[in-house]
Picture 1 (cartoon, rainbow, N blue to C red):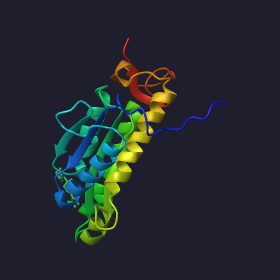
Picture 2: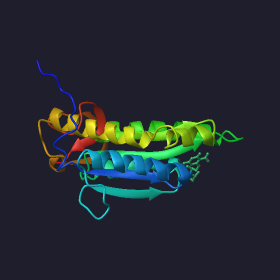
Picture 3: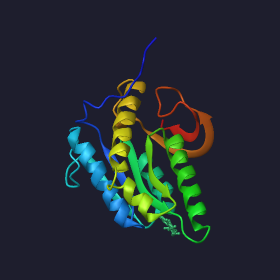
Picture 4: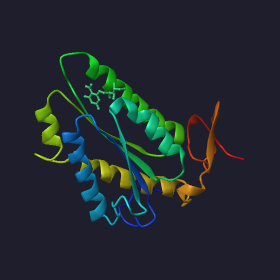
Length: 193
Ligand code: INI
């Protein structure tokens, strides 16, 4: 039997999309810096003018799932990293946004077979968010590590296929996909023929 495990080397051909919420950009701006630092130190060129990382700005976390799914479906990326910060206020808004973004990110990954990293801080206070965005540690760094590991792991599981060769399209029908396709699971995404 085989042990599959993501590595943090051989990153030259990996491509990532980073989706960033403008809402609470004091926090999300710091998360990007952490992400970029980690990617760079592992040999990925985070320059937006380069070929390895694209950046997509959106209004707030509620918009993440739609955009993340679209990017994951594009066959351009080995992983999509979603960065946001949902901070509790005086109203139930936090709960709606946090709930939708977490479910939506999971669904985007599940439906497309592309790793979509949940890089969304959910905190009670701005202070807690700041502590996780650079003051004590920078979770952006960890999210990039998660993306590197998952990108590598998925390439191995797919048998070394380049992500750009995994063509699929949305059909609206539910069917199990073969291992050589883009997912192991029941999904409404099916291979292009
Ligand atoms: N968006 C966030 O990213 N974080 C929040 O804390 C937040 N709160 O609490 O309101 C938030 N709201 C905006 C939301 O994500 C949408 O952009 C907006 O509702 C438009 O769809």
